[in-house]
Structures are given as C-alpha cells and as structure tokens.
Length: 124
View: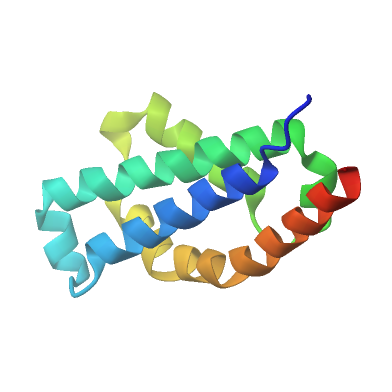
C-alpha cells in the first residue's frame, strides 16, 4: 500500500455521521419512522460509515487498536446487515444509532483524525 488513505476514510465517516445527524435534526422518532426519504438518507450514510470501517479494519487494524473505545467492528456489522438484509432493517436500531452512537462518534473522530495525521507524518 503506497498511499495513506487513513485520513480519507476517517473523513468519510465524519461527514456521513454529520449528515445522518443533520437529516434527523428536529425530528422525533415517530417523524423518522413515518419519513421514508429521511430513513433512506440516514441508512445510506450508515452504509458509508460501515464501508469506511471495513476498509480501516482491513488496512489499518494496528491504528484502530489504539482506539478500542470506538466500535469499529459494530459499524462494519451494521453495514453488512443493512446491505444484505435491506428489507429487514430495524428502524428502532437505526434511530437509536443516530441519536446516541453517531454523536459519540462525532465527538471522538477529530482526535482520531489528528492521530491519523501524526501517523502519516511519521511514515514519511
């Protein structure tokens, strides 16, 4: 692997988490459950987060080991459940993820991103 994509994957995760949270801003759970368009937008962003986590787990597992408080494998697992069982998505789980897990991820990612910059500089 010649190119350090670690910061890119973390940026994709941050942007997707931010978008998913923005889509649900001002909604309550019932509004979300009734709004297919918002559901699909949020679900797409969860897939993006999970895909980035999959790439990170494959290519940067040692770096991720430095951040065991982040549920990298759970993000990958959610992506797989969405992608392979689209018609069986539990919207309660999606809502809870956007309300609790994504804000936590958004809090942690800037520091992790900074660590990724430091790691990239050390590799040069």
